[in-house]
Each structure stands twice: as C-alpha cells, then as structure tokens.
Length: 119
Image: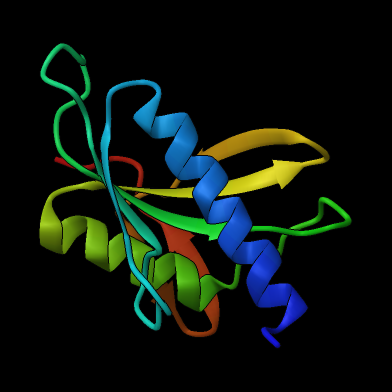
C-alpha cells in the first residue's frame, strides 16, 4: 500500500500536468523524483514564453507550503545551468498557484540573499 503523502503529491503533479497539457505544453514527469524538480515543461511554439519550465510541485492539505532556502538555491542553480525558468507550483485550497524562483539566489553566511540588479 503506497504512502498517503506520496499519493496526494503524485495526484497534485498529475493535476499540474493536465493543466499544462491543456495549454499546449509538452510535459515530462520525473518518477520518484529525488532530483531538484518534479516536472519539465516546454511551451508550445505559439507561446511568448521561451525556454523550459523546471517545476517543483508542493502540495499541502492545509494550504501552507514550506520552501527551504536550500531548495530555492538548488532550483536557482538548476535554472542557471539549464537556462530555464524554475517554478514552484503549489495549492491554496483548490487553487493552483505558481511562484517563479529568482535564478540569482545565493547564501552569505547563514542568510539567503537575492541579487536583483544583474548587469
């Protein structure tokens, strides 16, 4: 019998896949994702968006998600490495929400910083 948290997370990933496919995206799901992201989506040719989306899915029954600074740093590094946009998809009740991860997160000491002025 599968873990209840795993099943709810997997179902949430399938919900994201369905939402993206209905909008013309090509989506690949990373099974038993031990890596940085759960889904990779490429936009249709008619889209204004260029580059792939690296999606980390976060499901919470209470609607409150927790994203660690290490996870943000790993997503930012993957975004720079693959020249793609890292996104965190999460739920607020029944609504699907998206949060773009700044690709220029870094750590100084024990604090997480964000570099906004890129030259």
